[in-house]
Length: 84
Image (tube, rainbow, N blue to C red; front, side):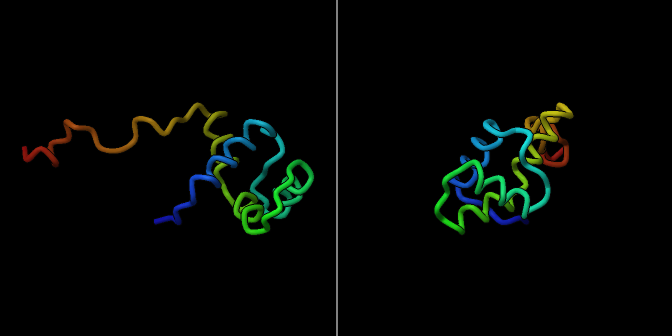
């Protein structure tokens, strides 16, 4: 299981991706530089959490490939869970 990030970190990551879609990469150090240049985040912890997240790059890849998080998981008609 992965670590659960707080809602504020997720919200900022989404906003940053919308505002700067081509700036973020998989590299932590380059993401940190982008955040220092384009934002005024005073909290080092928050900046590092945002720079280390894979949400921006994962979401960008999903948008490019047309993948969606919807439709994943078990369906209600799965016979193993219905007792059939």
